[in-house]
Length: 383
Image 1: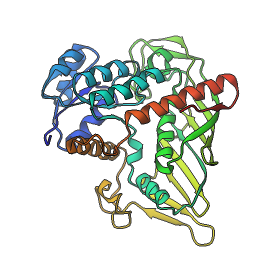
Image 2: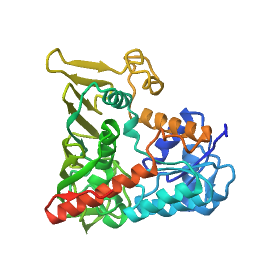
Image 3: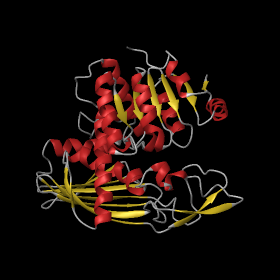
Image 4: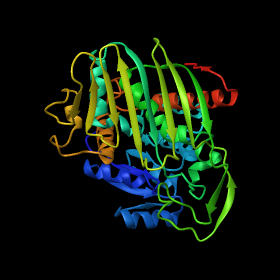
């Protein structure tokens, strides 16, 4: 199938990001489904889309839609992804894939049964220098990996008055900082290294057990711009920050720090992967530089440049060296890989994107992290 059309569910923070990337790829978007018919109409007008779907059933009945992009709140991902797969649509779902591992396992099986391409939007993988790091690990530049450390930090929930539906366990899940951003970090480093987690130990903290909920809902990341006229206190059980010690199969060790209450860090992903021969480090706030550490010669800083990148990475670099690429470009590269895979029409081929199986793996890890935190103990991972 050469021509593919997309339909988008959700018009909050991330829905328009999907739309922009699809437009840059020349993939037609048939319309949008919001939380209400009125929201759909308003979003279709604002985003310049031809159709406002009044219900999920209406979107899934549209034969012009081949791929459904799910960018709605976490609690509805399972139902929407299930319905989309059963209707014969391919699915690109924002993380988390579902609210628990029973749901995510069911979605993995349903994607297999329906023979549809099914992806989770772990876009950070598609930073070109993260792809370059993976290639360097694969070809043995680092030697055996000894350690993987890093963090994902933000500040948009720093204050008690900062609020969004994601802070509520029944809306976003029992884990928030770990589930929302920690899974991005974990997916990234597992993708780069090829390692798998054998056991983990977590220590999480809720700095604001009470937050002030505005009478009107606050969009993700917009709290600093929105001034609420009135607010009410609401109890919070999800974590604001936390640390996870990791033991990988094969003997490597690691640690992950996640925080949505680190002043000044707007959206900062960092990793350092140390091997027997070399070390790689990357920071999303400086995404066009990869640090390469050596023992017996000068360290290096590799700039993102197609002329300097590994051949496998060059297709994911859109601009010449010195012309910076960033966050929005990762969605474009991810979607291109996903849609090219669908067009190839060979589901037996290795996936070129994060799959529902990857999304399930991250949810299993989240549940282990929560068990570890509550038990104050190491937890062995079960495949």
